[in-house]
Length: 464
Image (cartoon, rainbow, N blue to C red; front, side, top):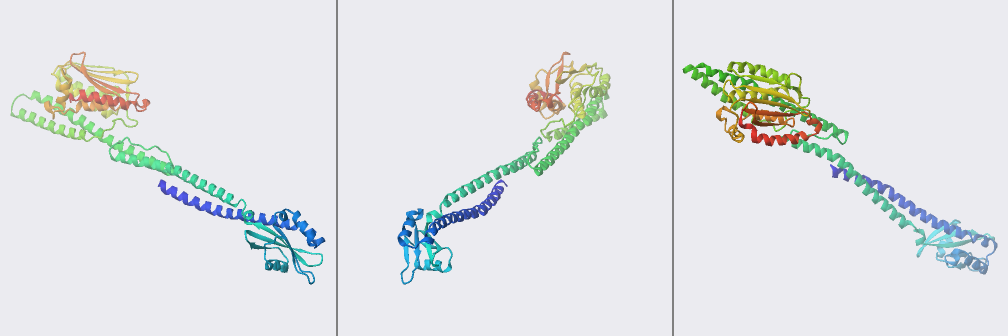
């Protein structure tokens, strides 16, 4: 497209230059010829007063030699024959007798081609009524004086115009091609799964409209995929949590074939659900969880989920402590995502600690982040690396290795991270750092999320 525009501009400019330069050069050439012959006519007219006074060859010879053209041997006077006398030629003549006779016959100035140039033949009336012819030689160099320079100047100007037009066309083509290239690159990136690809809304109006349409389409794709991720998180919330409660309740069924069959059925169902969740999680795109305008009140979501888990904690004799949720705390995480992360952490407490083990949930609102702490008084994790390997080991110990992965992704989507350590209660503490100023940093949160991803990859998958 760029080269095509350059070729079109080159062709158009060349035609314009030829259309104007060639006629202008011809006009210059004609003006130079007119100037040379006009000067010759003026020189011929200077001898006219002398011819009106006398036709004496001696005096006329002196008069011719006194002129500029006569001194340069470029003027001649052709007198007609008087009586029985012969015609007299004064000065250096170059035109033939036939040309002189033809000029005398028609009675007006003519030009004749001679060797080295042209001869201007100017008829002049004598006192006797006869016609004398004054000849002035105009050399070829004088006729074409300045014409070559004019042609060179015109050619230079035309070439400069052509080069300039090509340069301008190339720049204009670049302005057209660059936005189109960015649009094509973004389309390729989107096709490869990089959903953050966007096109700057620059360039001509049509390309700006195409960029707006592409960005809207990409946003729609991200929104659709975000809905799928929310559905996966909701699946974890809706299926995994009730199954945890059901599995714990089967322990109170006692012994017997019916009880064993119930427990086996629950375990089989839990394995099937784990397979479904794992499959859904493995197919997620590698993009953030936080969409434009997403957010919720963390205190409200935590109070709601704790109301659900507190009933089960009461049945198992667990002491529950909740702190820091007495006032609203806004975070840039969608409500279903935060609820799924809380269910994953609290489900771990019930799954991996004995009945009667107390646990606590604390919320700390800092200036640039919100920290959610889930701690218990259980046996803890002596080796986080071993827990990581166990979490990736095909669901051993009833674990899918995906619970804390949900938590990690929620934190990293805001530029935060997740840390696993020892709690003040003596057991495990999961510290979730949720960033609040990621948008204000203009992308630095992504880098922080990358650091969190590396930390998470070392620590986070030991528990579900």
